[in-house]
Length: 172
Image 1: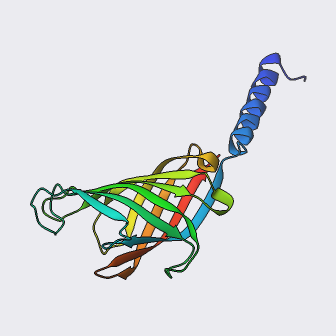
Image 2: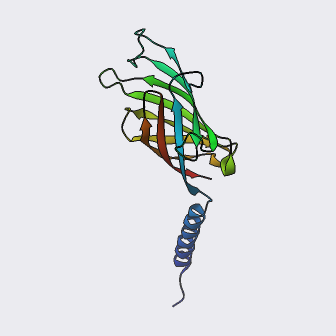
Image 3: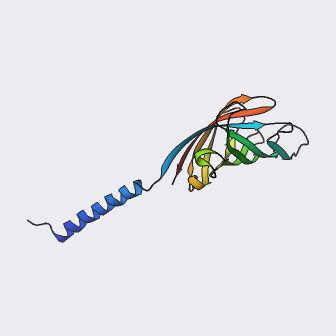
């Protein structure tokens, strides 16, 4: 018995849906893993942060403190490592009880394959812990980016912080 028109139409629809799914999966979305080190100098002529709001007039970070940053992204934890970009943005102490920090950063890549591209990172963290924050956007090679970042403290001293970053980015 020959297939009916409705059976042929159903098979055609199923094939079209399968083709659409295959095209969607092959849409060009890529996953990129970035690994670099974030260097922050806390004081002196080369400081990479500036406290712009100090509600308690003290040197400690208290609720309401706002800091502008222009930190270095390097390919290694050593201060002589190659500069690959900057982390520019602001941090604010948003937690009264735990001194949690809300962070809005743009990773601006200035060297290598991602030169001219940026990633936008936003989230909350506590100092001294592994910091997980979402990637909420990007430009250049990271246009329409999503993903997440993990930052692990490597060096914490009175004069500098160095964090090891692993960033997992999904982009087109």
